[in-house]
Image (cartoon, rainbow, N blue to C red; front, side, top):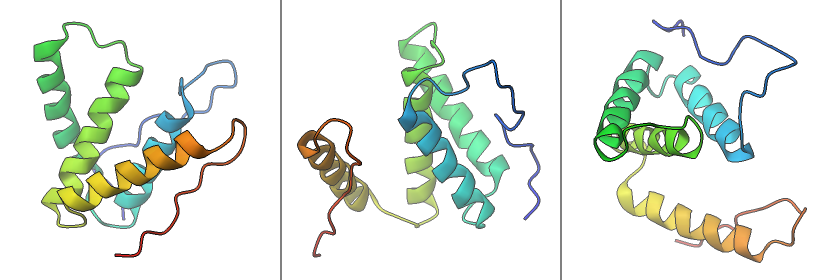
Length: 119
């Protein structure tokens, strides 16, 4: 699917750090994949993300482009997943709980895996 906007962070620059934390790149990759699979257009995501940034700026004058930026990104992704009925609030809450439990119980340096929840 061809999008109306070019995807950000696609120019490769060996000397520049693009993502400050691993979860930033993972969140970005998940969002891109969901868009490329046709769950929502990049234009739709950019609109929702822009609104999330505006809301955050009401509380914080200067976004640092790091965790606050990607927290807005996560909020936007969650919002569009709920809006498109790809997921719902309860499922996202359970996923966050499972993720929190997984990373708190995983030894440092080991891969974090979320155990399947029997629903």
